[in-house]
Length: 176
Image (cartoon, rainbow, N blue to C red; front, top):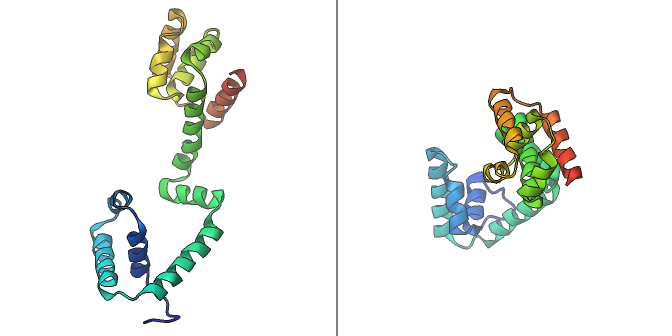
């Protein structure tokens, strides 16, 4: 039995894999390349065959808990998102959540009532930012003259700046 020895990374990964449910593990395994899958499989099989690794598992559990307490912040997650997706794509996630939240809080009829007197550019932007199924329903509640000009603006417009999108979402939230 190894006491006070460092546990190698593949073994740590094998211990983590042992704790995951099959469906969760299957989703995670899809993201590994062939070499990573092979190393993980060998470490897993080695640890399964050896047995009597409770002390090592406890050591790894302690490391996981320490990491979770120091990494379990919102900033840690945001920084990981930036590393995974890039800064621009990571910044889009809260924006998309905000628009989904607007859609979940307001019926399309209520939002259409707010938008009926807005400029076509604004309505086009709103339609492009909301979830597609919600926008499709919203279209049926907009006056035809507003809808036609709005879709034309949407089809011919350049991408909107993030700050403008954020300001528009905030204005809609306040109006609702």
